[in-house]
Length: 151
Image (cartoon, rainbow, N blue to C red; front, side, top):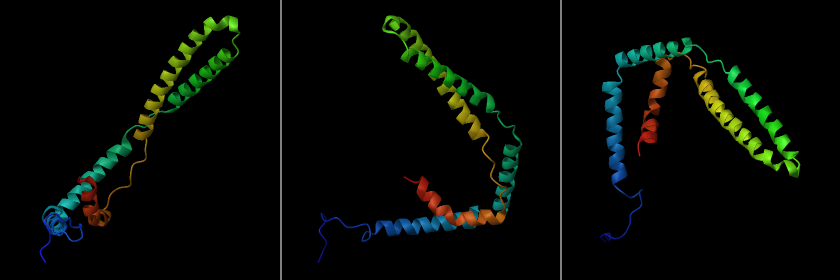
């Protein structure tokens, strides 16, 4: 019986995924045998460790002033919110001024928090030195990495 050209086949029955797997296996084999040679891997480990050392030697950003500024502005906002809540109906004209100050302080807090996140990322601990053994442990994951970055 000849399959209908309009009938969909499941991926399990399709020939294409099998071909892709064969091509993929050939590419991974070529890369591991010709590109990722012992000399290349040793050079990669050396360069990675030099880079990691430079990261470890960079100065740490001082985040304490940013945290203090955020805390100070939060206190100011709390005071202003309390004042707005305690306003008499006869003092409604002051509400706009308080609200502008609250918004201005909140914008400053948002900016300081962004700066704080950036500084904390820069202060993240540096990974340990890379060894040839550990790099070889990572290589079998090459296919998973390729699959992750391939659409």
